[in-house]
Amino acid sequence: MNTPQSAYCPGTQSEKAGKSTACQGCPNQTLCASGATKAPDPAIAEIGVKLSTVKHKILVLSGKGGVGKSTFSAHLAHALASDINKEVAVLDIDICGPSIPRIMGLEGEQVHQSGSGWSPVYVEDNLAVMSIGFLLSSPDDAVIWRGPKKNGMIKQFLRDVDWGQLDYLIVDTPPGTSDEHLSIVQYLSATHIDGAVIITTPQEVSLQDVRKEIRFCQKVKLPIIGVVENMSGFVCPKCKNTSQIFPATSGGAERMCSDLNLPLLGKIPLDPRIGRSCDEGRSFFNEVPDSPATKAYHSIVQSEYKYKNPYGTYQGCEFSNS
Image (cartoon, rainbow, N blue to C red):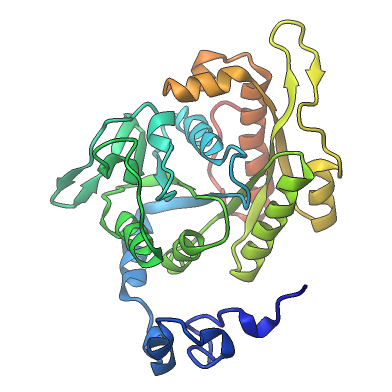
């Protein structure tokens, strides 16, 4: 059964905020109806100033969980930081499931306060990381927060972290199209966002949710850099034969990109050594430089440049390993 349009929240900026049938029973109905929520958040301008020293901002999204967003974010950062002339940072806004500290080999590290704000944790001299995982007393601690508190944490990461001069800020997001996604787009609205890289796996059950993420990007006017198909076949490390572990029953990401007129940046094959390197907090590129997956990652980074260059976004930037 189709849900009537009136059942959806009209949004705080709408003329119907606090007045539609969807607002009945909402604890924020009175606040929204008063018009107070339409005032711009002063933090947006502050974040714009704070991130004016960050050249490129890339969001890694997927409507589906378990497709390898955090793994891709970490490896994208490692690939970009392999050029020692580039300053790269990863911001993990998966508030309830922060996995970037483990993947980047930073579990147990803590954030320090300085005169210019929170100092991110460094993997390399030119690769920094910020995550709520650094603020927890134990990796097993559960973050049980409602939307406003999660949004406040994201705002603090963007406004209060001393990012310094960056060439790239990679934002790793949780699955879905909810609070964290709306917040990061809103808070970065005063800055230039290069766009989103959307991660999927070949199965239709994944693509179905990814289409929702694409629709989200279109609604909030977030540019889509392209789509990456992760876990795209398994290449045996010994015999080099390829097996389809997750068959693309509906044509996979390639068909979806063709239908939606989106660039397919590449396909990353399964490699058990990726999971092991993430568990151990090591760079997969350094561990297995000759893996087909390593070559796929580097090819994707290069294709990203080719896609963006015609629009001038990456003018003057080069990928050192191309």
